[in-house]
Image (cartoon, rainbow, N blue to C red; front, side, top):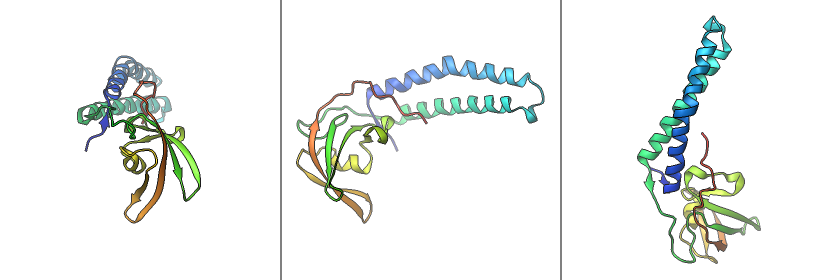
Length: 167
């Protein structure tokens, strides 16, 4: 399995890896060393917490390296007038009689609370490549779907302002 990521995503992950290796890792090692000096390790909360933070940092580094290694690099190009990566899309949900504005992003920048949805999500897959005015069925799982109408598409590019997701 691979994730579809842009070159900006890869660059941001490489920057985070570099920061974690050059800044966070030495600080974590120093914290472990200091906490170890407090004495009895069986009842030393500071030591356990320092080790947890160190392990969490190492885990994030491995995760990002694996993401880069297995990523499929995609471009944000798309046909004129159709939904593509980083476009703002106004959607209408007829069952709820509600409108919602979302931005289609890569899996690494998802934030549903801010209206940033993945191109690989059920909604993202359903609307990707479609044109304004089209109504599509979003299949959540077999046998469960809902209609959504694309009201407007505001083209946009990957401006690198969106942060990558943490954990």
